[in-house]
Length: 178
Image (cartoon, rainbow, N blue to C red; front, side, top):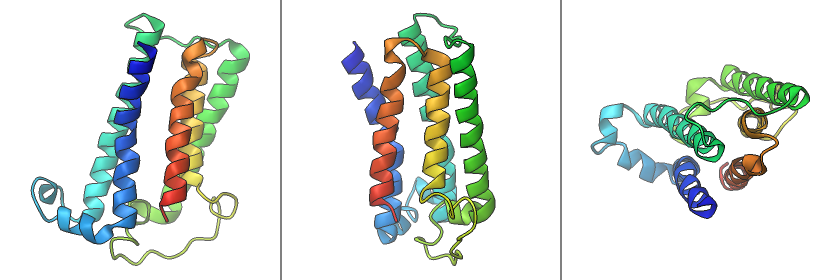
């Protein structure tokens, strides 16, 4: 069951990274795809990426909560971490939220959702958080994921599987996206 669950989670969670890879590395194809139904109904290409982002976050949330329900054996997943790990998880979640909010504040919606690749003028940002981290949005997302699983599943042996899977997917994205 564990292997089947991991494969299903990997397939669902990889949809986001594969989409962003396609947008970043083949923007002309993405632009053409956005001109056809059903994507055309979502607006211009940057708006399509923005709306898909929310869909991917819903998928991610369902996968994470589903993991907690299935692996925890309860329809009401509750935190399993002790006080120290709960605090560490909370710090990671807070750091992740801060980094992601900083990226959105610096780049804006168009910059975050591949505007420069899709023909928009997006200025190069050198200030925080980009002055400190090469991929602050990915680091922020991973901090949130690790924090969530520390809070919800630590010290259960399965707590590390999805954070490691997401780390591999985000590392792949950081390597293959501009």
